[in-house]
Image (cartoon, rainbow, N blue to C red):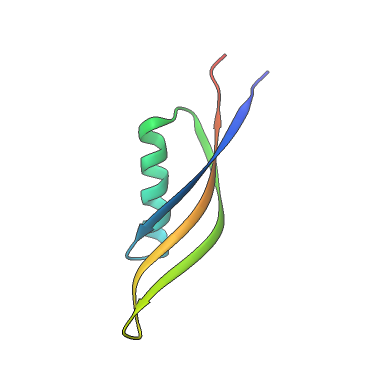
Length: 66
């Protein structure tokens, strides 16, 4: 039987895809058996009428060791 946990992460990047990848990369640096990510929210930071940064709030699932 497997048991999974979730942790919430906020990450940023110059695109939505980069922000998600940055969050997943950071999660896999410290967590083992990362299985999936649920993107809860996407935010664009705007300065002077231009998007300067994208942020994502995600919930990452990982399976605990037996």
